[in-house]
Structures are given as C-alpha cells and as structure tokens.
Image 1 (cartoon, rainbow, N blue to C red):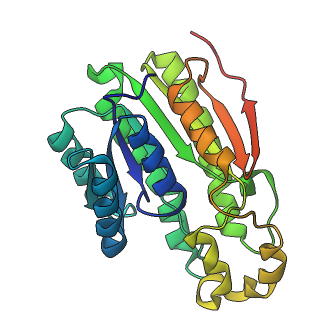
Image 2 (image 1 turned 135 degrees about the vertical axis):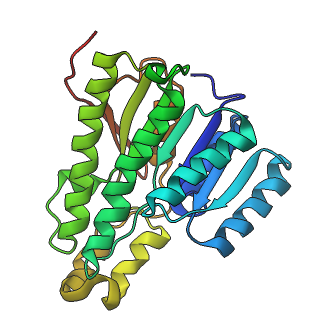
Length: 258
C-alpha cells in the first residue's frame, strides 16, 4: 500500500510508540487522526505536527478507547474530517496490575472494538475498498512476566484475536490485511508506570527486574516494523512483527488461503 494520500487512525497516538507511528505516516504523506485520552498531550502533539507538516494533515480527537461509544464517535469524526479510512493502528495501552479490569478494557477490549469499527469502514463486505489494520501487542506475549500477569494476558489475547480475524478476512474476502506488531520493552511513558505502586500493586516488588529488560527510546525496529506492515505488498494476513531497538523479526502464522 502506497501511503501518500491515505488516511490513518491511531489510538494512543499522542505519545510513545503511537506518536512515532503518526510521525512516520505524516512523513509518508498520509493524513492522520490522532486519538488519545490525554487532552493536553494531544493538543501539544497536534500543534507540533501542524508546525512540521502543515495544518490539515492531522487532527486530534480526545478519546477514551475503553468507552465504546466514544471510540465509535472518533471513527465517525475521522470520516467526517477526511472522507475515508485506509489504515487503523490499535495502539492504546496501559500497564495497571492493581486496576486489572481497566487494563483488560484498554489493552484488549478496545482492540477488538477498534478492529470491528475499522472493518465497518474498510471491509468489502460493507461495500468499502479494503485497508490495513495493525493491532499492537507486545513482546510480553511471547514471555511469562511475573511483574505484569494481566498485561501479559491482554497481549496474548491481542495476538490470538488478530490471528482469528486475519483468517476471517481471508475466508470472507474482506480485502483488509490484519497484522500484529509486538514491540520489545522500549522506554515510553507507559513503561514508566512500573515505578508507581498505585499501578503495579503487589507486583511492584518486581520493578527492578522489569527495568533491567528495558531498551532505550522508541526503537528503530518498532517504527520500521509498523511501516513495513502498512506499506509492503508481501505483508499479508497474518504477520507478527517482533520489534525493538535495532531488532526486527517477522513471524508468519499459518492461515488458510482463499
């Protein structure tokens, strides 16, 4: 998929990996709807992007992705603004073992809802032209992490859901590529929550072990992985790109072919 002229929606797009994805999309001449819960951060992000890429290339929509109605409204606002939707990156995530039910709502339930909403706007079964969905999981999905069991479970769930939906897209001829990106432990605002006992609860005692696993910055491999899943014709249902600082590895899951 050539990215110039395409329209993307990125959840959790005002900071961390989401912000880097937005930046990459704009550099490729796509237009982007930036969804984020943090209004201040989102408005600052938009102002900086407007200064760099010009006004009208992106829009900020404050959105709590755990609220299904708000998420649906954000998709419609994107359509009203740009008139089409080609790429959805379900990236928003939190790390809260104390309020673990919220972690499930944000990390897994919102990915499911975001995927279904994306299909409504892109799938051939709805008379649309197709597109690309990237669901963001984590390297935690391939590991057992004693410091974040619920977070780990949600990221396992994202991979399982994405694999099933990719198979459904092939079987149903949706015309939508559905892939999953699994970033390594990179230093983003989300990972700073490991320092907060209010977030980690009884697993706070494992924080030093967790910090030893961190990479530095938003890894080059993560951004390259996202760009590859969006733009390469050979990126098909369902690729899992395991990415981190200087590391890029593609795992191709077995799916049925049409």
